[in-house]
Length: 171
Image (tube, rainbow, N blue to C red; front, side):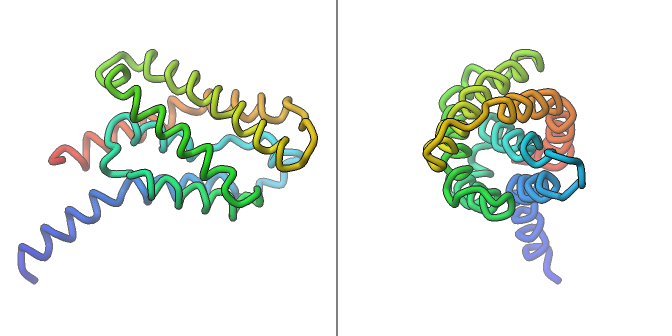
C-alpha cells in the first residue's frame, strides 16, 4: 500500500473519531440496564461529546453530523423524531458561539459551562417533550437526568481530553 493512501486513511480515521465516539456514547446510553424507571433518568452521555467537540474541534463534528446523531438518539431512545436533533443542535450552537470564552479556561469553568448549557438544553428538552405530549410532564425525571449527566461529565470529558491529546495533535 502506498504511504499516501495510509496517510489519507489515518487522516480520515482521526477526523471521524468525534462522530464515532458520540455514536458510541449514544449506544451506551440506551443500553437496557433492567433498573426500574432508569430510562426516565438515564444520563444523556452524547451531550458531553457534542459539548466537548463543539468547544474544542467544531470542524470535526459539523452541525450536519450533530443533527444525524440527534436523530440516532431519537430512534434508539424511542423519543419523538427530531427531539434530540433539535436539542443537540441548540446545545452545539451555543458551544460554538461561546467557544472563545471556554477554550483555554480551567476545567472547573469548562465543567460549569457544560452545566449551564446543559441546564438550558434540559429545560428545552422538557418543554419540547411536554409540547409533544400536550401535557406538562413531571420535571423530576429531567432533573435527575440533568444531575446524572453533569455528575458524570468529568469522567467522559477526561477521556475526550486524553483522546484529543493522543490522537488529534496534528490537527
